[in-house]
Amino acid sequence: MLLQLTMLGTGSAFSKSFGNNNALLELPDQQKLLIDCGHTAMMALHQLQQPLEQLEGVIVTHLHADHVGGLEELAFRRKFSSSAKPTLYIADTLVTPLWEHCLRAGLEDQQHRSLADFFEVQPLVPGTPFSLTDGLDLTLVHTDHIPGKDSYSLLWNQKLFYSADMTFAPDLLQQLHQEGTEYILHECQLTGQGAVHTTLDELLSLPASIQSCIQLMHYGDEQPDFIGKTGSMTFLERGQTYRYEI
Ligand SMILES: O=c1ccn([C@@H]2O[C@H](COP(=O)(O)O)[C@@H](O)[C@H]2O)c(=O)[nH]1
Ligand SMILES: [Zn+2]
Ligand SMILES: [Zn+2]
Image (cartoon, rainbow, N blue to C red):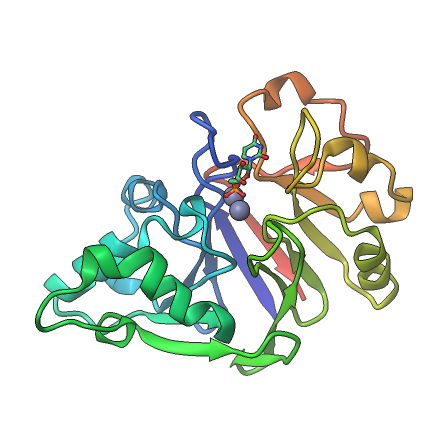
């Protein structure tokens, strides 16, 4: 199974250079899905000349604006263009908070009163593989980010781990590596304390065999100062397409 991933952005929440850390995923059956849809996602798709009508759906990791801030525009534009509702793949725990805390204020009117008026909602049970298409399973992995708020990393066929925003989880990374995960796309805070994110120094403390599987994303605008300082870990780049055989 070949997964093709185009990074719409690779920046941290406040990055002005790299856009929100969101991706466009293309499956062998031609399905196109977004991984997160932050407030810069619509502009990024416009620049890629990617028609919104061709998007099958969106996978949501958690409810910060750099990950869900573009959903209001996506919902309205799909509604106005009379195209099919995009599917929302989202942890069951996040369905109600997404509507009540993020989208309801902007989307609700007298005719549209729920998330299901704009999206085909596909709740996912964390820890249980979900078959997106033949030969492709997605498992949500609960990972720590903001205390008290749920956030889910994405594990594809046990082979590719795409981190949500998360604090350092060396035991999880070690376990994934031992169980055959070959690719780890990991968020990375380059400077400062990693209160709610994983720092570069933390990732550099991992065994070399794990570091060699890691590509860094969700980084700050100081990234150019860190080129050549990430060991064998490489930076994912905005606008670039990556292919993973999983
Ligand atoms: O440099 C930074 C930027 C943000 N934070 C904290 O992260 C979250 C919001 O950003 P996300 O990327 O959506 O998680 C918020 O709690 C900020 O305080 C940070 O620690 N360092
Ligand atoms: Zn973020
Ligand atoms: Zn976050």
